[in-house]
Length: 388
Ligand code: APR
Ligand code: PHB
Image (cartoon, rainbow, N blue to C red; front, top):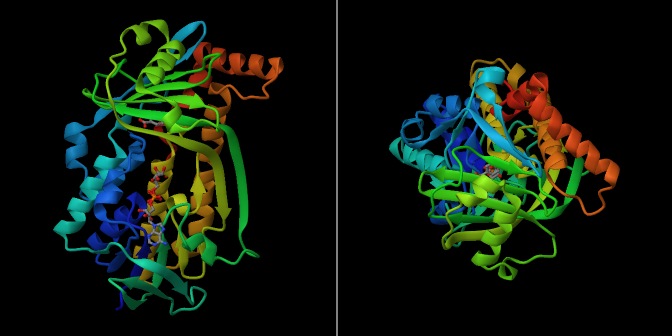
């Protein structure tokens, strides 16, 4: 087999890159470990930055998002003293789009089917070869048969647990990590959202978030100790704890129901540098992980895709500047989002070893967000998405 760009991983990064490159006349093959149904069964965040909205339109996949997505012009934050709103549009003239990553992935799959893109599911034993040469190739197993895919470039879109990052020699890779001492217990329920916009709550009992997918599908999270297991939490116990942490008026409006998905996710900040090694590019979660507090995971994957897409199109006509600067360009934005996600996590959660000084600093950060327009503008600009 031969193609121009071998894409390892068929999640949001891989599918969006495949869609954009094929529309630009560049041939790709996507190698995905799971089934399409498994990829579409994943419940992930649902806040799209404006740049992500733009890229979906550029990929020809924005129609359903515009029809079913919900523009949000602000969000609420709450402390024990009550809740306040940060108005994104007033602070920086922009907004976000609330539209589930699962729906975005579904739209990407449909668009890929429409152009006859090559996506091989249930592949295994993926190995990247000769990435430091001009003739890289990938070997893999599919339906019990071994295959070889020759290519010009390899995009490692295979997430945190993929093979691509580890193909870069350990002696070359520099990894930066912070693991947070708590997790997020999340519930998806077919209930009316408790508020019209997202509510991020800093409460003495711990962090909580009230989010949504649409007017009849709500997504809620509460901070839990890393020792907790999903089976420790009945739906009733979850709803009680969520009510205790949300602002009183939001708690009073909370419509509870049976969870259709319930899971605990750990929180980490992670970056692996560089994001390029020879003909291999790391994209999305393969290169970096953010705590979900700032809703940056999917949006960072999209900006990586944007930089790589532009680089590979330019390389077609011999302009290699995008290829050479991909890692530096992507990492500049990655670290800005890493900082914002760390900051949001730091001011909203209760840390086990937090001192009274730390508590006062959290309160001061939140009061500044409540009272100081320049603080609100900085948060808004980062939340709606820095330019790329
Ligand atoms: N071979 C082939 N495919 C693989 C391999 C492998 N060795 N390892 C992982 N994969 C596939 C996974 O099955 C998954 O479908 O790569 C894909 C990686 O997708 P994601 O983990 O979703 O990462 P990415 O596409 O970068 O999207 C980032 O997704 O997980 C969320 O929070 C994350 O919102 C962020 C977004
Ligand atoms: C979600 O809707 O799943 C969500 C929204 C905002 C976040 C994290 C998760 O910061």
